[in-house]
Length: 188
Image 1 (cartoon, rainbow, N blue to C red):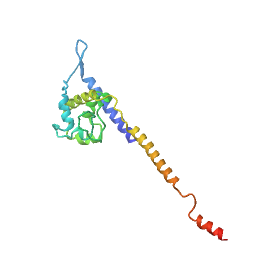
Image 2 (tube, rainbow, N blue to C red):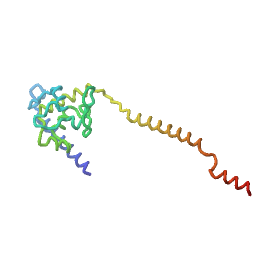
Image 3 (spheres, rainbow, N blue to C red):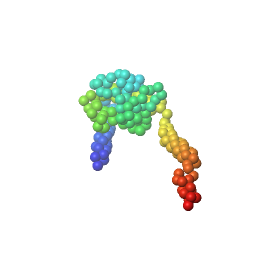
């Protein structure tokens, strides 16, 4: 029940932020929409440095890499507490990622960044980096863990059956006391 309640609160929060974003847009005479506030443009390299912690956040928050991971070649692997963000832009879109980082909908993020908020420029840099990572990373990362587990299980069964057969063939054909029993039968 608590999970459903949290999900509803997060959904309402995102919907409210979306409505605020849409209402902040103004339309000029040509019909094009322009945002009332100019959003900062992100720098992908600076976002990479912020993500890994090579550049500290201005308010002293923890690096994203301490909880999250981005699967790029030549990129240091991150934490496993949070979700893998390699394809976060594909899953959530850039505005969605921006809302997650700025809105702090998850308890651990709220605890980490509640008193040390991330600036709009830093969010834009991180989103730019995640966009670049989304484009550079292979689309379908194939996880062969299940195949390895299946092959290992089959190999283990074959080895155990082989050992069992080997020792079963070498078993005694008759009980130990049969020689003594036969001798007793002859003597009577």
